Image (cartoon, rainbow, N blue to C red; front, side, top):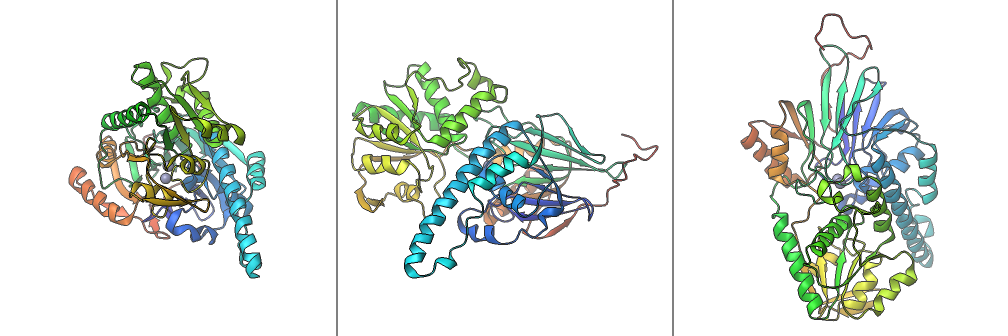
Length: 479
Ligand SMILES: [Zn+2]
Ligand SMILES: [Zn+2]
């Protein structure tokens, strides 16, 4: 049995891990999109034949874990997908949005290229909204509940556990083989922050012959969330008091619901000045409804004030669906909190709000997530005086605040603590991280656990031992 990572190896995005149990039985854990610097890899071949993949296990619905699944199906995958129901629902939202953006981008590029007479050089979108709909209509899916082993074949069982990263996210344990040489492989998935206001803390796993663990923040510890919430509240209060409006660029899934949960708590504690709150993102609105449908997966803190099936219940909260409702927000002079996407301001309705509000020193923009290099969000966080939005130069006078304590990922301390709960942990493999951070994380693991970890390279073949998949447990071995 061997494992080959075709993505999220020495990098964060493109999660795609191929497990070859035999030369005839292959499965994938995640099939995500490369984002940022490695984007061109999305257009390269997978490195394996999608038609030979029997099973695809999905840890969670982020694009860097599911973004190439429609492509996999287009190229012949006709196996079964195993994931949680919540992930399946969020996946549809994420993939439709991704397809829509790629189609729009394709049309823009094509128009430009046509003017240069180079239309045939523009690559087709990886997949379209129609491909995504086709996927959800045709692919066979098997749902997993947390902590209930799912028997996938005679020789293979998977257990999904809460990873506390986004709704439905999972750590997956795979029990492979029958008999004494059976192996347990654990894929951490993306592990969440223990103090997430919306989700309960991650479940622990106790046994692994091989652990494949994410390393996104393996090099650092986050600020305590309490401090971040206070900073968040102070910024909102002072902005509203001076007659301004607050703009919060936010990711549609998890971060928006976290922000709503925090606003709801402040409101209940009478610590939020009178204001109107808008979620101006169709994707965030759809995602929030999915959260409402899975109260059992939310933290007790999050559901204790749930009313009429609505988890994020605020009297002054409005979800704006259509463009005219979104535009109407521009007429509001003061006292609004506007949550909109995209989280890094590289597209979406947030651009309109920034264009209308950035020039006014009474307003604030609060960044609650990571801002990648090259994005408008990053420019604002770094103190740009002028920015260009929709071909117009805008003076930046609004207060720009960046709050770093909200994170959907465990930090070094939490990752190590999660690993310490293993009673048996044989081999450790690091995936899903930037290489310099992985070196720091590896040193921290050696220090804290006295174990060596291996940094997985893309395409590297990792031998995980021989397993018996005959389907007939040998006599006399202990189960
Ligand atoms: Zn993720
Ligand atoms: Zn990820």
